[in-house]
Length: 512
Image (cartoon, rainbow, N blue to C red; front, side):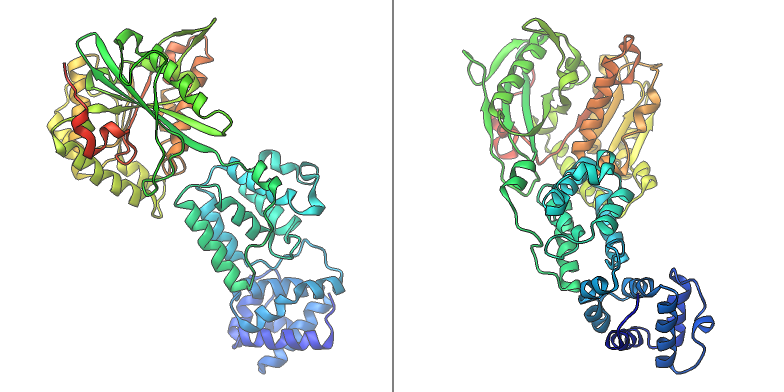
């Protein structure tokens, strides 16, 4: 790249302003892709003479673009460098530089990467594809960017910073991508992305929004609803229960009001009474009715069943259901979670109080900078819980603020199982996973989703347990696999059906 005399002068003044000492300039040259010591390039003591010689050397060795990028990456807020780079497109066009050269500061890429690693790659892929499709020269997106079929973060960087660094408005493509992605992710990622976009736009003098939203975009990127069918199971006698169901079509966070739909079956009253042996059949019928309410929408439906202690480990998600001419299973088709009825419906307010306290700790913890070891320190892994001192376990889980308890094999005794669940509630532990039997083939998979990635977004956590169940059902000897026997309790105190909200608890009766 050869600069005109005026541009060379402008660059010299910008570099001198950004690097006011020879030592700082030398660090730039040594640590960048220029890979030289400053004295090897421009010997002397007068800083402006050294910078002049550096630019002259860079021209002779076709490294002007590398010099500009390295300086701008380190000093994106320097006024003179910013002004020089502002007119970069004219300079690049005159110099016939390819679009592979991009001056987007590396520090901003690192910042958005710290956000992207917490977001599901499918959403990232959709946002990237939509961004590229709305740039007129990139209509054949999969042909131009085959890496979209199996996108990862390094490939994303190559696409947005190298292959297609600018959109039709000459704004950085990555900023448009972040704007689009922010519209369709949940909190706190939405706020993080919007904050990043605003910071970058201000520092680089970019006008927002960087694109014009089209109907094509709206149709392509229909948001996925996070839907929850919540079913309260209340015992009537030793064999009979009452079911009450409510659908939340789209739950985003505890801070937003949500719509609620009462789900009823034809020819039944609000509360559906049935034998416990028929509970799975009726739950599946309620699922069918919920799907009708969501027809025409794109949604992820999670089934949350509030059960009393004695039913928490019964495995109703894998009871066989005859629907039409097919055999169905709730847990094979749906993300299925059990929740504790007693936690929200008894007179012992301490259960609920401790859950609220622990859940707030969990949200604060997961929202901070943590690693896998931090996660491991907050969950307890037990091989068995037979003959445990339950009071000692409660104290340990309570004082150490454990929020996930994993048990490789739950006790066979119904009495001991109830004691285990009671201990969870007294200690305020919101999440527990357990296996219903011992010696399973893939027990090592238990820890695969107890990671930062999955726990930071519970939708991914729920999905990973569902996939484990679905994979197990594809095996001929399914009874030997963890997915067939896994129990999963997760109590979010802020997502409740109307009848179990604290102000409405008088409407719910439990016990025989």
